[in-house]
Amino acid sequence: MNNIFGVKVMEDYIRMCHDGVRQGWHERNGGNLTYRMKEEEVAECRPYFKREPGQWVKMGVKAENLKGEYFISTGSGKFLQNVGLEPQNSICIVEINEAGDSYRIVWGLENGGRPTSEFPTHFMNHSVRKRVTGGANRVIYHAHTPYVIALTYVLPLKSEVFTRMLWKSATECCVVFPGGVGVVPWMVPGGAQIAKATCALMEKYDAAIWAFHGLFVSGPDFDTAFGLMHTIEKAAQIASIALAATGGKPPRQVITDENLRDIGRDFGVTLNEEILNYASDDDLYC
Image 1 (spheres, rainbow, N blue to C red):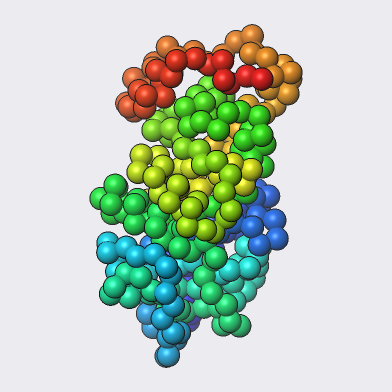
Image 2 (image 1 turned 60 degrees about the horizontal axis):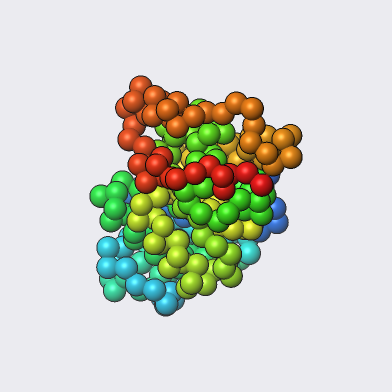
């Protein structure tokens, strides 16, 4: 192995960026990906770190449970389509200080730059997901998924409504995300307001829909996080097609609540009862 790109975690990270681009989710510099590294992964990458790390940069947020951690991050203003072509100029590895409130670049962005402008939002949500999953979740991924975005113009911006629509659009959905999905009303991207609102939802959901903007998911590894994003977007596509075909009216046949319970029972997953018992599906249709 002659360079950092032979380290598996870097290969997997770069591949996931490429997979998102192939789906059409990352126009221009849209979307971002961060990964909280394992100790052994940091050790594998350390020989390729800069001799002189960058300066410490205050994030404006703080997380005690992330002090001393290392993250791989896409760069602010960088195009994900270029990650596979010029990773050294498109992504970076950052170290978090012992106060848990600043980062410094230890590898990457050789032509200058900084981590994604939404790094503080990712950072705060990594803190939440690390706590609620006992350290299992390591990936935070944001993409501009078109069918999810389209549904936010049609459905009420309620977590219960979106979850039920997605669950009822594709059989596998209640198995892939039995806890449901959260919904954040439109807010300016990258700010403290949307970061706090997303954190509140990430206390109980693996995914949050950003109205008129895209999807924000978490997971323990790249495959799981990408699979969650892909499943939600595909279900949103099916829902959008069905709604268009019926003029927004209820379809003739649907996956029933009893069907959902049967799926949960047979696949051994516990569905979010608060969502399953939501009073009415009237909100699902125009």
